Length: 363
Ligand SMILES: Cc1cc2ncn([C@H]3O[C@H](COP(=O)(O)O)[C@@H](O)[C@H]3O)c2cc1C
Ligand SMILES: O=C(O)c1cccnc1
Image 1: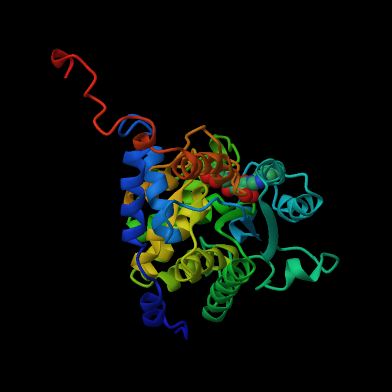
Image 2: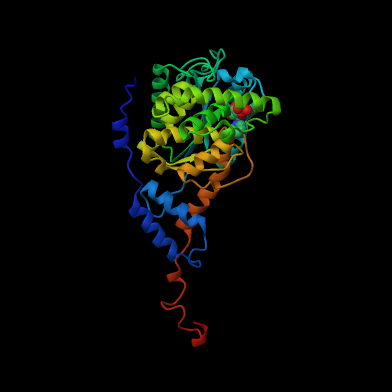
């Protein structure tokens, strides 16, 4: 049982501002360019107007990446190409500014915040701001046991909501949820398999680059996890408890709360997309506030993109996570905003009837 008030949450998520989006579509038609010539950038500008309630859309000056770190018991079963110890080491790498997400965030002027929700290591030496939302050390091995207790699901979900609130209250205008946790592509695939009633072979991916033996173990783990999860598939919070983790439960709360706070999200790879699927099952209209940044190599991510009707902005064969796919797509969203807001109007350039000076047979 949960004390998360889903009815209140559903009522708190509103739709995008259709008037602002439609004003932006009209504006795009009047810019110094042939009609429709910005292609998909035009849809993106209108989407941004809808989420911002502003036409033309405002620049995305304050982009925040929150990396949700956690360990997964299933990683001890050899489903990853790397050992679980990498998770804690990477948390320190994020703090040192040396991870992939740091490089891209610096390039694009975004801020990175890393949070230990469930790393299975002694992290007492880390700054309190990194561990203040920690739920537990590692999550249960989802093939044989629940990842979390009901109470832990709730605490993680509510932490994710608070984290989103903190980012929005301090001025974020776009949020990205990044992931770090060895074994998390197994957990993400399990969430997707359970919620979409898919077979292991429909969702299993190569994660960090596993060999055939690890792939066979991963398929087996997914079969066992999906079997356990199937019994509770109508209850998304119970699915998080059974086959999720502390970091994915928190990320789900974060994505849903971003929608409550009318703040756009650029989704990343398989982990953020799996959490988006859980979030959408909890609060249907939340997905109005999410855009797909990139298409990763993970089949489970592709299934979610299909179900949510999301077309990723870039498809570069990336499979890192951390928020790097979303950050790679960010300049495209910014391009849409800048062209829509900064281009001049065709009406200022041409006489009222631009065809008037042309020979009759030219029209
Ligand atoms: C050095 C390193 C940095 C990473 N950054 C993100 N991941 C990504 O890879 C892991 C998921 O893949 P799997 O399910 O196969 O373990 C997660 O930690 C994810 O964040 C990394 C993985 C490694 C090894
Ligand atoms: O889809 C992803 O984001 C992904 C893929 C492999 C490993 N880590 C993340």
